[in-house]
Length: 59
Length: 461
Image (cartoon, rainbow over all chains, first blue to last red; front, side, top):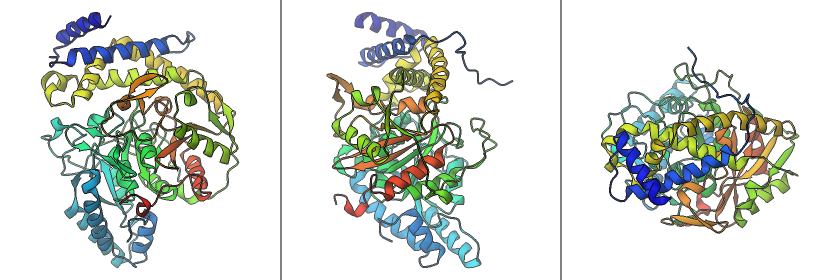
């Protein structure tokens, strides 16, 4: 999983034009792994269909 | 005056012309410069401007004009606030060559208008992304209660400077707990108002969805006076709510009958004995019931993800071109946020509104909620991780475990200090726009001796 995520990090960073410095790839993969795990925490809470995306755009 | 003097003590002496503002500020600068050698709170000093402002206050008094309720009281600001003619560092090396700010941040201008005198800018975590103020470029700020320990962050210089009596007031910003964490670890009062209450104009951003301006003081009346001064409509800040100002100081001693709940489950399960001692002491003093706030862990997680995603997006251009100028620990977190799926941040925003509505239900039963400010007292400088529930977790990320839940939904919070050994803080959390009531409660806890900051003269030399 970790090696897979590091490969994903390298690929995404390259696509976004981010040059990872030495040692950074594993750290970034670790942080991204934490974010995905955290996302699973709030994604597990069932929201009602009317829990709408708030909009801050006011034309 | 003594470094133990409060802002209101100093202002009373200046307004009564028992002390000139110039003498007050010269004394404050001399003390602060000497004491800061051991603490590293300040990154810049504005001596000439401070003396000039103090002289202007004395001139106003001589003409019979009102110089404001904070006349002659020194204050300092986290170095992400714009100060006219100075570079806004935001704790970053890559901002060191940025052009100077054209005008003061709205909050800085408001405090000056109230007569407070700006003496310098304060250390912070780079771009406010951290809870430690162990800044790779400008050094660690040391905790005045134990200089081997962190001050907390990201407004660590602001918390430590007030605790040590370098200035009686300071400004910070709070996105996820960056006022409340250093206030707790340094043993002072801190205020994070309702989201949208205070103008953010002239404050270097971190997460637009979550950024707040806040303040620090050693006493509740000083904090209330600063809060009153900071309010005011800023037509140029679209993020500010169109709400009338609600003064706190005039009614600070008015008795309230409050229904108070001490939050359990998430807010106790990983808390240290010190944090629980502080919480239970305040809860006992207020006759608090126990209550649960469902999905608090999910709210903290959503705040964490939203922060990373928005922060990463904000910094994407500089990460492409100047990645080597970032603190590595901050850089890698920002890059991870920039790489995270966009859906993650959108889902966090959707959860945010729902969680806000769930919390409103709790405020039908209670006026104030209590929670620890941090899971632990200040860890040693250089300690990267801390054991919580059998897991080694990052100090930099975890100190805000209990604060992120409330800033996520913009609730106002006053952090009140409990000091038995190393300080801890207790969050007094209210429904939106209840800052004045929370400050009254903090003042009551202070008068009753439940919560109190130490005087600088009581701290280790």
